Image (spheres, rainbow, N blue to C red):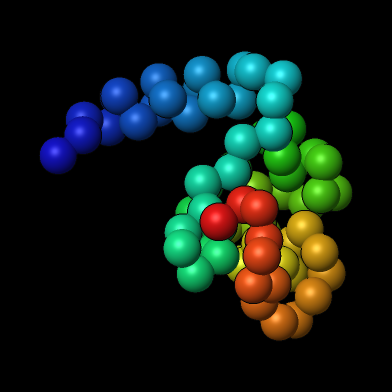
Length: 70
């Protein structure tokens, strides 16, 4: 099990970098994003997490078979 402080350290690190970061499951569900990613899609992280990437990135209701994020 990962310590809570280590998780906070990772979040601080990922939010401090300029690149867009999103952790996406094999079904397209976003389970983490950094602040830059959220800003890029004009949303906050809380509204992005739990959504599928095709909804957030492509504005599509259906899964994209060849999505480069998965």
